[in-house]
Length: 421
Length: 162
Image 1 (cartoon, rainbow over the protein chains, first blue to last red):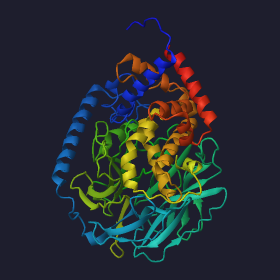
Image 2 (image 1 turned 180 degrees about the horizontal axis):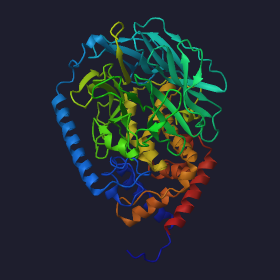
Image 3 (image 1 turned 90 degrees about the vertical axis):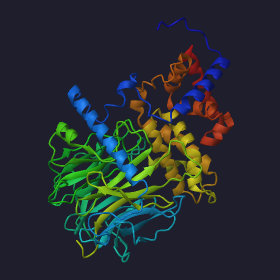
Image 4 (image 1 turned 180 degrees about the vertical axis):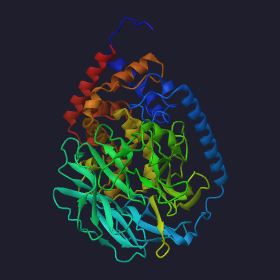
């Protein structure tokens, strides 16, 4: 197209053009994330294939075709399961008897999100009861169950975050005194070590940068269950460049966690390392930043989910997450990419506003509990923001609802019932 | 992002009598559009709107005008997040033409090239159809700041599209 001579735009003409532009453009912003590419054709189909796009060559045409075919199969399978389960939302999960294991999750106390408590239930959602009794203004989040099923560790966000432990019967709730004093700001994202005697958590150390708000440090630390003997877990020298959170231990000791780059839009990825901070490896591509990102390694000592990491994956160009798995044993970007499986949908072609988040393994590594967050493109008159807790087999099949109430539920975890570990 | 919300908190106001679900239903789309127009990043906009709602529920006891609080939070969060990314923002190529109507795409590109505060004011003026006084009230900015920001934005837009 040849550009013609430019004409002067006066105030009235500019006013008209701006109104026309906003009236036309703004509704179009609802459907797809804006792309900086002028070639819309390459914006979506290769997202799934291009997991490590900035660090490896583009896949071959054969790979593209093979992966596209796989994506179609996965999408078809998912649609089939969705249809099969449409009228079967309140059912009993398969695997161990529902009373042998417990699911703990965060449930907001009302639809105004004025606070949130922990709820514990059988794995089929029955026998649900509140574990904590926080008041308005406090949110109890990111619970983890101890290996023996007797304790739940979580953090309470009441402006700043503190780590607490409560019995699985709701008794003896107390704050773990981790000695967080200035410049320490807060402690978050706790979890148990495999022996149940220690907790690993993210410690935020200030001061925060006045421009960016980023703290001096946000990495993983470990302490005894009573808060003593604090030691750093994350590798040295990463502070200010990366932040680490949401650690989860494999039965034989290595740690998977979420690492965030302290740049631009804070992309995150799943990593693993030895418990002494060595042998750090990236398992997933960098993906869109998220406040709720999780990664868990299967507790299975054998079988198909041994060393399999489940995580929520949100491609950089997408607004919704899917549940994916990757073997913690993969050794290279290409190997990890090839071995990554999407259990809920194909992220490159997902067109709905349903997001799948917060996956966690069952104690036997056979099923996964996760959050379904429906965000209709066009809100309906009876729409309310809410999340529902579901479980599914490790391969994405046999989905069953655990909790679906009018208020928001999120961040489920799955552990043994006391005496059943 | 969450940490910035505190700075936008109106103080000393009584609790709202609003159903959060209804509020979310009624405002999510509009707020997301607003944040997207300012940040030029749909994904980031979703996060900002989410954080604005989280900020609101944390302060539900002290906010009377929930919708006003949300709009102010979304704009201020958008501006702050983009300032935080100011290096990247300088190199934003702007959104690709999406209508294939040259007049609209050219104008949108010009809006996308504005500094973030100017883009925020232009969006409120021409999308939300707010007067200068309303923008000042919505953002808790001095009226003079809104006036000069809008003036600079329009001057720049006129030069850009002429």
